[in-house]
Image 1 (cartoon, rainbow, N blue to C red):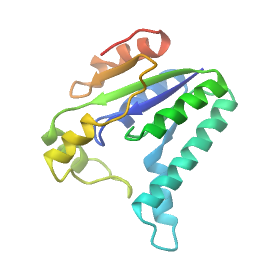
Image 2 (cartoon, helix red, strand yellow):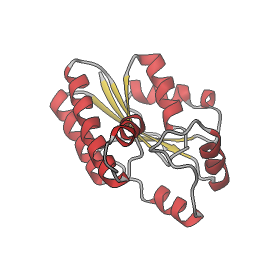
Image 3 (cartoon, one colour):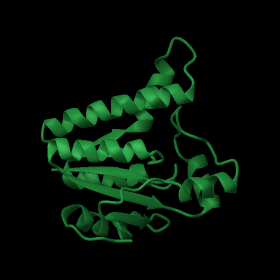
Length: 178
């Protein structure tokens, strides 16, 4: 049993990779955007993005805890931009005595990210584009990673087929890739 924490800029391929892993392993995906979008759509009052993000993360973690408690493998599909996300992931790993893996989807191409964002079926919580290259680079450079485990960074500018086996090897073994 494992818990995978995905990371990467919006549009970098986290959901595509999470779905491919789930198909191969049967892991349950907790998709932060689905929960946050549902909150934004169902709110009778205007719910700002920060509040909806905070509430949806609380729901994410409760679901992860629940499914790990039922002996399911779980994938959290969410950008990893806050230290708290790493701390919560490691805490649940210890609580449920599961293997914890961290996979970063890396796409350092401002134009390609904007192309992907513009061409996807966007949920309410998802951004439509990146306004500035500076914000894009800042977010990429400041994503959070756990220091105590081996992490996998995949170049998602390549086709999924070129790295999915490497990801599966990382999940099933204890190798360090960069």
